Image (cartoon, rainbow, N blue to C red):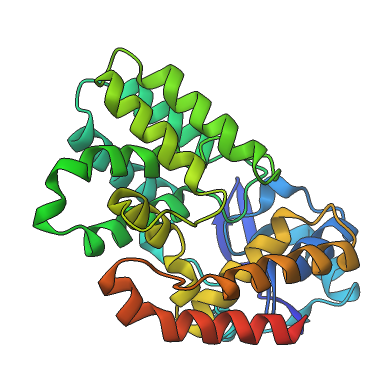
Length: 292
């Protein structure tokens, strides 16, 4: 575990800056930055931009000096690097394009939802997670699902639109938001379906014949089947969202979540997710549980 800093050569904010990164977790990075008095607004998805005048001070506080290329390699190896396509400006444009395909007459609502997803306190439940869920649905939706496509996609957009870190209450608030904002835009039956689907993401346990619920829950849990570095980023971001909790309190709660997910049988309900994702997901869950 280490916090690295490269030489201040990068133009930013009217000066030149160094990059400050962690080789292990965003939790470690945020803790170091807070202790050093670096404001959270200096955080840029996987690193802090720090002005040249702070360089020597941060080294004195424990940041390890490395060349720029070495810092990038270390960040990639840590699994914490955010790819360019998932950085905020490109990500917002990609998501707005998807929204305009879904409900082209309501760009304002799409923008409102993206503003919610981009709230500063979020670490995992961000626009990147929304895109990941939508991309998972691209894989899981079959031609036979055409009648379900609209409501499932809308439920994905709304499922974490309200997020305060309160399990159950967040899903209820998100479902209520969907009911209010979609009324009069889509048929009443579709509004009820979206509301119901959003509520399902509190348990990820849809009934046997609920194809729409299977699609949404599997897409929401697709992150569990990521490559080890992607899963590590996910776990670090979850911890960062609960950084206000003492480590032992977080660990107890996280252990309970992992154990509940491992008891879901099946973990994934759609045939494709079940066959392609189950093994990796269970391995990742068991590895994290063993590390706590």
